[in-house]
Structure formats: structure tokens, C-alpha cells
Image (cartoon, rainbow, N blue to C red):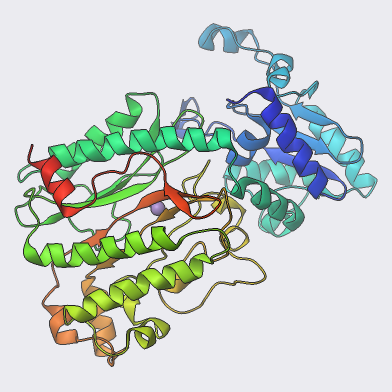
Length: 462
Ligand code: GLY
Ligand code: MN
């Protein structure tokens, strides 16, 4: 948790962006796994963490724009809770930690809101993503749960995206810590990978790197020899000589700031010549994207520049053909690179995705493309000093996609299908780093995880 002033100032900044009414930010509640008292690990809502800092279930923060008061609603722990959980702070003490003097039992929120609604005041709330909070909103506001997200405040969403997109120095320091843990996770995977070990053993070990420090993975670990499946959560295979292993993972530290890295490594510790050829194209795309990222460039353009590097590389190898600019314009690269170059990162690994990807990644100037591939780009808008984002190009040989495009003759002017079919079974390669946009360019966050062929082979063959 940061010092109280950080939260006070954030709420002040938010006030200046909202014209009138009440801003209500729901914290998360405990969520049962298989019976009520056996809960999933508690994860606080990130917007609540940002403005109200408290990592405790069952709280609601309210910012009254007109009367200038910030309030915290929640229930004090009772003696039963204390018997089972040990001594707990009071709501008043919790409020003081984040600069809030006005604290109230949760039931008072109902009367506060109904008074405000009667007086015609606007209640600003965010799109809910948890069932418990959808139901709570229905009870508090009398709006049917099936349509409640339509009533979320766009004014509030835009204001929060505006604030959270530009990271404060204290946030960057936390993200760097998360990157350090991500580094340790990846280096552990590189040291363990060899024929005969299971994907699950490596997954468990790198999850343990985060959990052993009191942290957690920032999302379910993707670790698979079938790297061509973009988000592959199956870890049932044994590592086999000759194959590649794709590891996409990061840490979420106690302050809940995240990291997110991908490395693709040879199971044998040595890349084959064919693997090197494809790997170096992805690495060139990753380097190009980092090199050109700077304030005011649109991430859509950075994505296209990375796609162009991929097309040029694949053309040299004979997998693609024709004019590279035309190939990118027609989306031909998406057979191999069917996802976006990256996303914002911060308190969420896909930062603020709960607020709506189009509000976070796009604006009035740059809107989401509908072409296959680039349509998955989460971040297309111009980037600014202080943005933290991922750079994650990849090349994948997805058998079903290759068969579909070939049979439908999609982009046949740019793709040498006979050659591409020789790569079925190759898998996929993705390389992902986290960067901060700076005054005049960008910098990689954390220590760079071994990424060149020489660095990876050196680490895997000490
Ligand atoms: N690294 C996983 C993702 O960005 O979706
Ligand atoms: Mn990512």
C-alpha cells in the first residue's frame, strides 16, 4: 500500500474530471470455490485499489462530487470474525490509512443512494464483472442485473482510464518489482527445461517462484510445447527433443502490480537452424517495436511496423511473397501473427480491461480495425509518456488456420501455401517484454530476460 497522500491526490484528480453526482467504486467480496467458507484467494478490484488502497473484502468507496466528501462503507468485524481471524482493524482505522474520515456501515449505503436517486443525482458506477457485485448493484440501484452494465458511467470510465494510463513513479517502482519476479520465473523455466520433464513440473515450479514470495502469477501460466495455441493452459505433455517450449507468465506482487513476459526456448537447449530462422524474425519484430515506441506514436502503427518485419522475414524464407506493404495492408501476416502486438499493463495484467477495451486502447481518433488479426489488437491509440505496455509479437503455425485460409484461397497472392504446410508441427514463437514510454522513447522494464539465441543457449547450457 502507498502512503495515504497518494490515494487522497488520486481522488482529488478524479473529482476534477467528474461534473456532478456520486462516484461509487465497489470493492470485491470473497468468492466461494466449493462452499461458502472455502474461498478463492481474495483479489481486490483494481479501481478500488487505485483510489481507496484497501486490500480487504466487502468495502465500497463513495466520492461525493458536490459536498466534497469521500466515504467508506463496510461492516466492522465482529467477535466471531476476530475469534477465527485474529485482531482486525476497525473501519475507522482503515479509512484513516487512506485519508477518509467518513466511514459507515454498509447498510447506510442503501439510504444514501436512495436519497440521492430521489433528488435526481447521478450515481456513477463502473461496469461490474463479478456476479456478487452485479447483484449488489441491482439491490442498491434497482436496475435489473441483465442490463446493469448499460448504465455504467462512461464519464467515470473515461476519467479513470485517463488517470490510470499514465503511471506514477511509485507505480513504476512496483511494476519493476513485479518484473524482477517475472525474470526469476522465466530463468527458472529455462534452467529446468530438458527432454523428459513435464510441462506441469515447470509450471508448478515457476508458479512457486511467485507464491513462495507471497505473490501470485498475474494470470494463469501459459507453458506449452504447442505454442501455436495462443493461450494454451494445458500442461499435460512431457518435453520432447526437437520441440520448442513457449512460456508466457508474469507475477502479481502484493501491491497487485503485474508483469507479463513471454520467452520461447528449445527443449534441447539448442535451437535448430529452422527454429533460429523463425525466432530471429520474431526477435527483430520485438526489437523494432521497442525501438520505435515513443510518445505520440500510435500503437496501431507500431503493430503494423512489427507485422512488416514479420512479412519481410517470412518472404526471405519463401513462406510469403509479393510486396510486403501490400501484404500487411491486406492482413496476410495474420496467418502467422493473428493477435495484437500488446496491451497496457499495471494493476491488471491487461490493464483496465474491465472498463472496456475500446475505452482503454482506442479513442475518437483511432478506432478498432475489423480486419482479422489486427482486430484483436487491444491497444491502438497514441501512447504517452508514462504508459506501460507489453510488446509481444509472434509467429505461429496453426494447422486449422492454415487449412482454412488455403482452402478459401485467402491472401493467396502473398502466401506460399506449399511451403507453409512444411511447417505444420513447428509450434509457435512469441517474445514479450514490458516497456515504459519515456519522454523521448521507451525503456524495457526489469532486467531483460535472456532473449537472443546466444543468451538463451548460454543460460540453458551452463
Ligand atoms: N500474456 C498473456 C496475455 O497478454 O494475454
Ligand atoms: Mn501480454
